[in-house]
Length: 127
Image 1 (tube, helix red, strand yellow):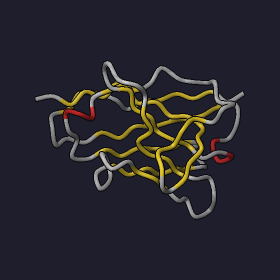
Image 2 (cartoon, one colour):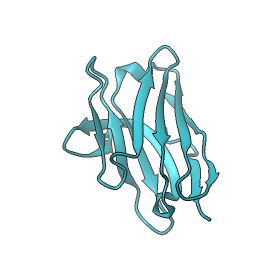
Image 3 (cartoon, helix red, strand yellow):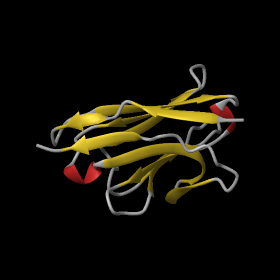
Image 4 (cartoon, helix red, strand yellow):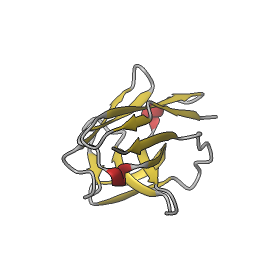
């Protein structure tokens, strides 16, 4: 069974950068499209980015992160990454990764059969 662990969170000043990692065990992540989801304090979890499992590695970014975040995957490491640059205070939240339904024109949503939520990676953007 797939197990997922998120890492790389931290506290940065506005304009700073962080790189989140999503590592899997039990099942290769390469089998799946993977999404990154953010849950800000007091808000519902939202999909911010995803990457497809196909060779073209097509991606999606929400308008709020487009141009500042970059998603990538390294199947040899069984990992998916989220490089976050030019962070803004509204980027604060818990970031989760999950197997996802990923289209290029709408936010990702978790697959219905995904039930392996990790602890998330806390990102705090504050001066």
